[in-house]
Image (tube, rainbow, N blue to C red):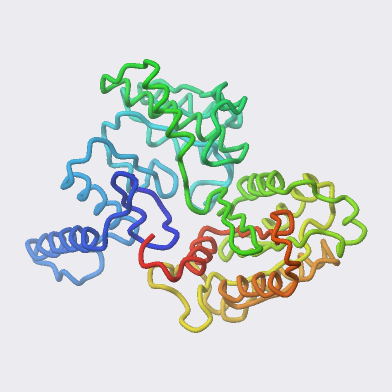
Length: 413
């Protein structure tokens, strides 16, 4: 599987049998591609160090992934687009076995357009003649019309997938437990079955059991993920668009047992709930406001968090970033001045004056605040309902750094 972005290690992007490449494999295939590009430039009489002789970051990793999978003789590869589809560097596969398009929303408008129809056109670019395409039946009507039109133009068929009845009624308990994941799982199931059927796997009881086991055991770090440590339940999701932040909010609300409506008038009665949030490159205030609205509605409580912490995506207080976690798509002066974070704090204080709002520079400091609070308020009972609950959301870069803080003692993903 080739996917992006990574959370902790760049090696996560190129996986075989569900595991990231080892450091040795990554170095081997990285430099094989690098050396061939250098040789190609020299053969053309160019300076191999000159701009344009090597593809940019994402394209380089895409090329490296294809080289890896050819070298390793993999049987099947799931290739996820980076941005869009039509002009994405992953879209050089002329004859895919099957294509799939997940739920569409408004994102990357500078590159894909500002309407759902324009975005659907870009996404539909992965469709190829003779390769069946699957997408979800819950797509907006404008997107459906565009997807159907492109399918006709490309000479292929498109199937709109409903939520599988066994998934809908919870007879299959998904490993990713959020209501919207039922849509994703049903699409994944349809795509996987298409490939398996093409390759002669019979759709008998054993086949169905294997598919079911996959749906029940799947794990995906940073997406609808819950982790526990002493006294704290961490709820983690990388929602970073208006649609995904709303889904993350609904999932978080579903994780809270018996929220106390009386805390609406007296937050001191509420079980402590923390928010750790950042979004450095999109409309952060709009995302935070959408999260507040979703949770307030879902919980029937205008004070969904007792504490809100806004930080940058910088991982550690002393050492800053791991090299794998550096993002160049940010305004360095804004990060240094905590501009986004201070704006977020002001916005949150305006919509929930009773919340304790704090701004810190690093993810490590945000985690420390939650841990220090938990330790100082420990009641010694040790029951799960006494846990402090914290939602970490707003950015996959934030989530990646957060997981690095939690697992910084580990040497591998």
